[in-house]
Length: 71
Image (cartoon, rainbow, N blue to C red; front, side, top):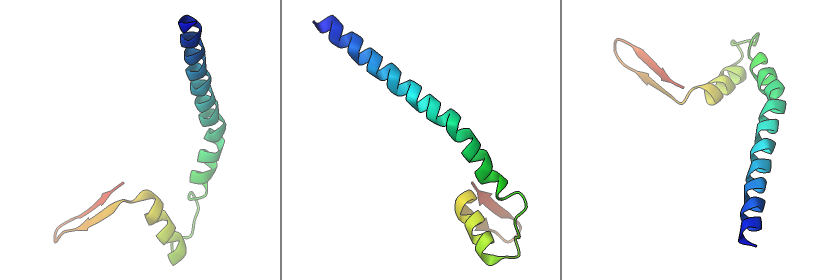
């Protein structure tokens, strides 16, 4: 009985892993479409600039001689 329980657990984990892999594969198009939105955006628009900074930049450090942007 314990052996069957172990097999069931292993199969459940394998199914979960496959579901995650499939979701990532299906989501590849969505990810590409998301980044394509920023390919030809108008950075003169303050709302667009704010959204790009919000999604792609974690911190900005401004020094006297340089600017450091962390993703």
